[in-house]
Image 1 (cartoon, rainbow, N blue to C red):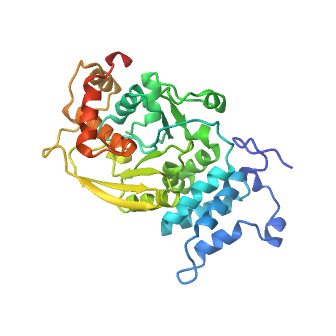
Image 2 (image 1 turned 60 degrees about the vertical axis):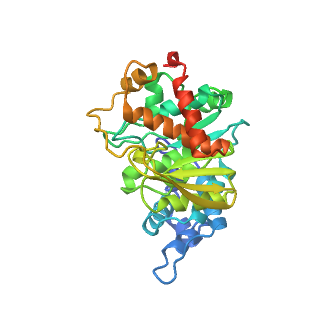
Length: 351
């Protein structure tokens, strides 16, 4: 066997399968071939994957039992046709069946952060700090992208001095009562590798979508944000298929779970297998000016009370309201009242 290619520590992963001879590839049909064929047989013969097929396909991908050519074709066929709720749910369970078992942890809220912020500061980080101060245990996971001008939550945590768990050793020792960021590269390195294929394939893959649904520690409350229209119902349906106790999907600012106070907001709920939608009116009728620069020091100053930011404080209070509505099953007025009290009584020395 030839040595693994750079960045591919496991010689039997997809990174190394390219070294198989062409005769091997041509004389024996690969187990993954049927999934590519199902998606790519043409307008009249192709179809969506069932939830079980999606599960099995992703399990093979996670195990490294897929050629790079197959993986690229599979991801791009899914991208062109767009995923279904059944496929997203199956991908999630396929990952969970194949990844290295995680340590047992009791977590209250699962909060995915994959999009980054580009118009406003990441005020959601202050919401996460408030929830931690209130005693809620959170799994905050995501990845950093490379889109110019975006602030990614992982980088914000590092700049603020909050822990970013660098390896599996730190993850195994992590106490969820301590606020920390869990990089996807630590939770599921194979998925991080696939996300980085965007620079080769030129397009995002379904991994960018279903990572928001992974819920690694089976938290009873799952918070998701999607920016693009049409995907909210998709993620709502996938959460229902996964039977999560409570899932809330919103159109978050820049695609992060953060409320934009200038817009009406639809809440896409999934409680177990049941789904419903509710709407909240906008907080402000007039728009605030977009900041010229995104300076993390402004977050610190607002938290400490050294500066005021009407937009930012509203984003914090009303995003915290959503989290409390979801986790405590509260009506909006009661959750908002608790959020306002939490903001006023925050420990300003934490930043």
